[in-house]
Length: 404
Image (cartoon, rainbow, N blue to C red; front, side):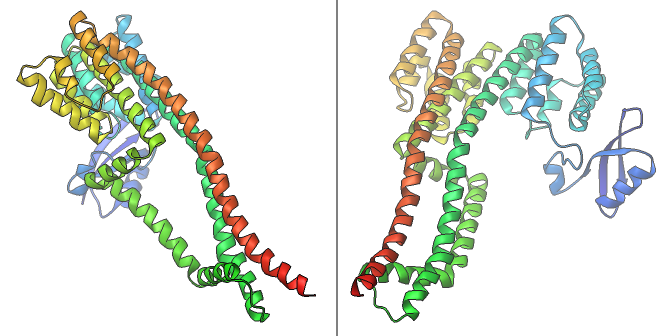
């Protein structure tokens, strides 16, 4: 099997090479014998080639790395540093192996006279199609400095929004997980043993208690099967969500049917749409092409279909931007009106920027509302289950003591 490896020398320089080996450990042994430290190892053909890049050591390029790379490149290009010199400076500053390997590939590409954006394009799992196209547009127009500055700002805003979403969901997830564990303990361990006490004692409890005890005895026998099945169902649902477009659309439509969740999902999609389309237009890309790229980046199938219709069935057939947007019911009337007015005024990207900031604040506000609603609902649900179990025990105990 043919393997391609990347490693660092003792002086910090990057070394690339290829070799025939039986497996990855043999490649690693060969790298160590030459006094090198491995960064990545990948097969040069078949399935692994489709993955483009498999990190074995040194982690991967994170969103924070992307922000710093974009910010530093923008600053250095702005003060007149050449692109190749800027990459060399970044190589001296960045110590993370994954970032250094990427920068080495950028430098090699530049030295060979290849387009700058091609290296970014070879990292599709790290740099989105929007990022690649913005770099391509900036390279063509000669405005890479402003392009990277805008990219660093937009990536920072996107990261802040994701952090808000994750931060808002931490407590409900912890509460849900704790509630699930408590219910598993009550139904799988506590309730069957309580049920067994009354059954073995020959006491005939009331109907309500008998129903609860029967459920407890049933879960005592098949409880672990139910728990394992539930966990497997979650894993399979996550897998199919990532692998199947149809299942993903089904999940999104189901969530969109829930009033509060639908509002948050819709606002997140509109924020991504506004921010992405604004960046692409500002970079000088044609409007229809910008819509096509934005459609792939919004992460919402309903909005994606709407944007593709606007591009292919509206603007491409002679409609104005405002007329094309008016045909889609996904967009609020305020957004349609603002886009129509900004089209006539000739500053649509500024209005989209304002919409992006507005919906970012709306997402934060909506998340707080959802969390404030979920917390008491989860607590009431767990309390209700505990209350039912407690009543099923208290009622027969009360009847038993009253007989004495």
